[in-house]
Length: 412
Figure 1 (cartoon, helix red, strand yellow):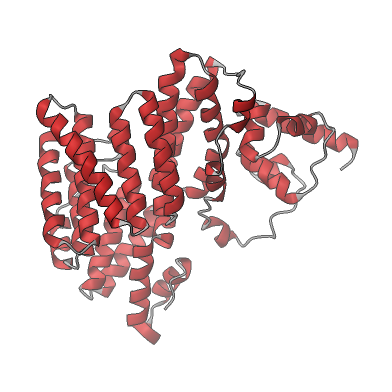
Figure 2 (tube, rainbow, N blue to C red):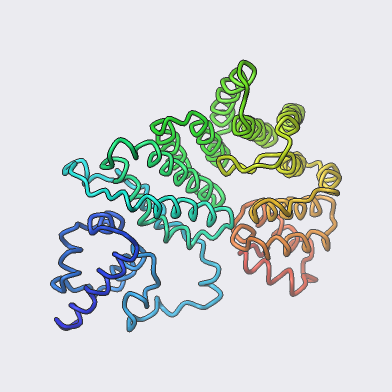
């Protein structure tokens, strides 16, 4: 790269950074470099010749590599199908590594700008949109610059912005926890949920803490630490139940309480405790009737419809496929997120596999894949169902099923 090319490249980096509303310190922190290094890059002093560093910089800016460096070679010329199937959360994992804003500890003087608040609110909403639609590659790219920005802002902003910034940070970590659970990375989900709980408490929002515990329990379930999941959830349910009984609860209180009952149902189902799981489903139904509508407080999507979706899932986990199919017969999830709709179809596919309704099972799984391809191709339960279908079919496996199994890496 010639000196003139370095200058042009540096100017492009600076323009893209400013378009994203990032300071040099924020972008440098997001990609694990120093502000001094980034300053030299933008001034055309420091060349960036290594492809891995170019990719890291492009990820931090949230742009494709070719936008940053038009003549850069593509990454080993990936096959289009493989690129479409990417659900990489590596950048999101890096965000969790170490202290989120260590440079601020050394130089506490901040560069917070109130004008960035609207952008931060929009970005936090966007993270949840990507999580609900299982677009994990996009989420990972977006989270790289966002979390350091939020963490720096909570440490440098004036007092009047602190509560909201901690709340936005809590929401962002909750979204990360949910995404990591769905991608079967429960260790990262645990860290994300723990940070969400802390941020919610700092924001002055007790219900946000309870919502964070819900995310934490999901991580424990994936880790097969069912005793920890049950303990954390039970303590939260008891505390919130006492509050609801002694006060006039808001819809948000009921949404969180009902979601925690559903979490306990999941824990008991995974433990094979049929009676305990059904008790928690019924308790959730009581709360849902009291709530009277489907809501999305704390992105929990709690309400009468989601309770029945969870009842379907619980029945499948317990091996009660007929009960699951009966519950779902008149269930309409079209007003819920794509993730919830796909989850219902996935569980129906699992139920049909249990009943040896193989044609219906494949149909449900393919419809779920149309809605949320990354979930169906990576979720353990989905892949197990697909694998079982291929094993039963043997040499008679259809082209359609074989293609699905190949996409999910679930052949035999």
